Image 1 (tube, rainbow, N blue to C red):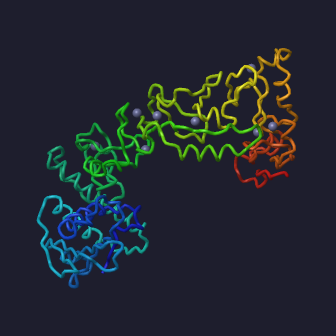
Image 2: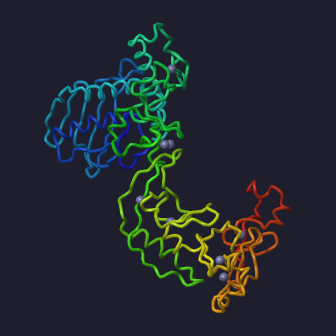
Image 3: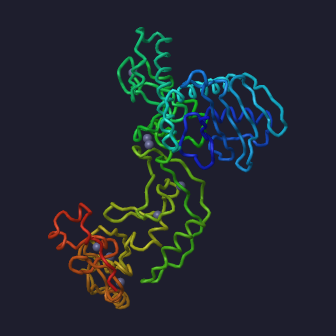
Length: 457
Ligand SMILES: [Zn+2]
Ligand SMILES: [Zn+2]
Ligand SMILES: [Zn+2]
Ligand SMILES: [Zn+2]
Ligand SMILES: [Zn+2]
Ligand SMILES: [Zn+2]
Ligand SMILES: [Zn+2]
Ligand SMILES: [Zn+2]
């Protein structure tokens, strides 16, 4: 008897097209007989559901729809708790050994009709697949064919089209809209089909939600509603277009009370401590939604430090941030102060510079900065104490020219695999400029085995 496990905590991600329908039936059954274990969401992972059917003996190749059966249990149980049949619509409570009729509410009836139709279509495809990923893939394609037919039937009913069309064309891999010949798109949840073109009269009302950047992320309105805050799509509050939820910017809230002793020049232990401090700190607000990647909200910024406490920062939390003099780089107040090398301050005038400002030099290792070029011109006015603490540069990276001071030059460093020239930590996987010239395109193709630099101790 062919059988599939449709809802299983371990196989969460395959997205079988019957998941939602079986979940609806499961919810009804548990509500009626074991309400404390009623599943709340389809991806909750507390239950296991299998769907199975038998083939007709007398008519090989046709399923016996009276044999369609679902087994439900909690994942903590080893035996089936409920055995559900679609015709008649009923279930057996195995522990109590009683048979209960399922009331024919609209949602459950349509879920069971879909399950029957799916089993029928699946059984005509003789391929037996043992791999659950392939099985789900095939199931999705089969269900898309069913939905493409339903799409066409809807157009006939709405009298948008008049012709009888050849259903055989829905057997092909990608059926097209029978009005405008655009591609059909399918909801990722229930696979309902619609015309890709919003202007086509065949497009569903409301149109399917589809991410502007990821064309495969599609949800119909009912599935969108059903997923609630776990929906993968969200409307950008700014441009009102659909966008993957993971791509909508958000501010995690400025950490409260970060107290770090600014690292002594040369101490490298600041970074891990800073990350821990960010992670542990309370925040001024809970995550606040921003907008999609195409939009810019006034006052929202992103910090130049990759280790910042938030990828994007709302205006409230951005106050106190530091922009470098060239205005190319902005860092939040905390990263500007504690994260080495993000903002470079001149020890005399204290103005902030970024790494790409060719207006100040700092040691790539200990991050001590020299005077900015303006202050360097007035070197004679500088305090002797400040002068003593200025780094003296004695070497530089063979690729980006970042400087190294006399105190750090003897520390371990990376070197060019070609000529052993010194390289800074951010250039360590490259060749130096000279060697790159000779090696031609080797580095770009990534096939040259000699591009990794060794640690030169
Ligand atoms: Zn169309
Ligand atoms: Zn937007
Ligand atoms: Zn997307
Ligand atoms: Zn904020
Ligand atoms: Zn930051
Ligand atoms: Zn200065
Ligand atoms: Zn140094
Ligand atoms: Zn470099």
